[in-house]
Length: 521
Image 1 (cartoon, rainbow, N blue to C red):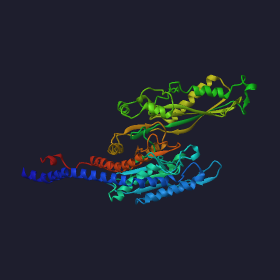
Image 2: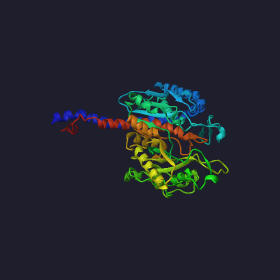
Image 3: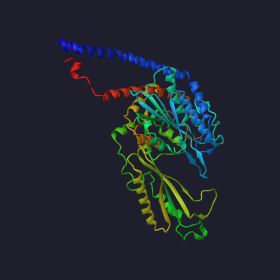
Image 4: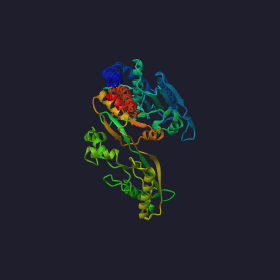
C-alpha cells in the first residue's frame, strides 16, 4: 500500500501545484489585459494620426491616374508591417489591361509573417488598402482625403473600408511589442490593393502560395460592418448569380408612329419576361429554385431572437414606407438565408428626360438572384434559362432571345462553433460588455468563400465598423470609439484564441497517464 501511495505522491503534488498556479495565471492574464487596454487608450491620438496619414493617400484602384498613389499605399503598408519585425514579401500581380488596350501594373500584394512557434495558433489576417472613388463635389461635407474628426467620428475615404481595420490590427500587435509582451499567436498577413475592383489575381495568389497557408489555423477578415450599434460577428453571406436577358427584333430602332402595332416589339417581350420572374410578395416564380435551399433548423432560428435590429430605424435609414415582412425574424431571414431576385434595369431602352417615340431594336434586361447555402450556380443557371425560354415560347414571338450568366459568386457560411468564433465572442464581451449578434450579410463577399475553398482553413468575419459608417458612400467614417475599441478587441482576440487553441491541442493529444495512476490504485 505504501509503495502505491509513494508512486502517487509526485503526481498528487503536480496536481496541487497546478491548482495553485491557476489563480496566479488568471491574475497575470488580467494584468496583461489591463496593460494592453491602458496602452491603447494612452496612444489613441497616435493611432488616429496614423489613420489620417493613410486616408490622405488617394489609393483608388478603379482610376489608372491614381495607380502610383495606390502602389505607394501598398509600400507604406508593407513598411509599417516590417516595423513589427515581420518578414514581408511584395508579390508581383502582373499587368492590368485597360479598356483602350493599354496595360498598367497592378499593385503588388503583401504576404507577411510574424512568429513561427509551432505550439501557437497561426492566424492569417486579410485586408485591403485600396478605396472607392471620392470627390468633394460628389456631396462630401469635408475633403475625403483629409480625415476630419467631428462629434467623435473620423470622416475620410477608406476610414472604415478598409484602412481603419487594417491599422487597428497592426496597432493591436504593436501594443504587445511596445509592452515587451509575448504575442500569443503567430500572425500572417495578406493585404491587397484591388479589392474594390473585384480582387483580380487573388485566386492565383492563394493557389500559387500554398506553402504560405500550410500552417495557418484561422483566417480573419475584417472588411464589413455591424448590423446595428451592437457589435456583431458575421458567419455567412449570400452569393450572386447575375443574368442578362437579350431580346433582339431587328438591326435598327424604329418609329412607333410608322411601325407601332404591326411588329413584335423587343421591349414588350422584355417587360413580359422580367415581370414573370417574381411575384408581388417577393417569391421567385422559377420552378425548382428553392429546392436546394438549406432548411431552417431550430438552432439557427434561435440565433435571430436576440439580434439587435430596429425595424423602424432600418426603414427610416432606407427611406421606404414598408417592408414585405412584418417581423424582425422574417426580415432578417429573407435578407440572409433565403434567395431573392432583383430586377436592375434595361439597357438599350430610352431612359433620358423628355419624350422619344422610338421602338428599340435590341434591349438587355438585367437581374440577379442572391443565392444561399446549398444552391449551386450551374443548377440555378439551368433553371433560369429553361424557365425564360419556356415563357418566351408562350409569346410566339419571332424575336431572338439570349440568356447569359454574367456573374456567378457562391454563398458562404461558417461553423459558429469553431474556436475563433468563441474567442471573438469572449473578447467582444470583455471589450464592449455585450454578447455580439451573430449575423449574416445579405450581400455577396466572394473573399470569404474564396479563402475557405482554396486554403481549406476556418474563416471568420470580424467587423469593427458601425452600421452607419457609409462605406462606398459620401462622408464615409469610422467612429473614434469603434476604431480604438476595435484595436482592443483584436489584441484580446489574440489572447483568447491562444487559450482555446491550447485547450484544443491538449484535448487532441493522446493521454499517457493511466486513470489508475490518478486515483492512486
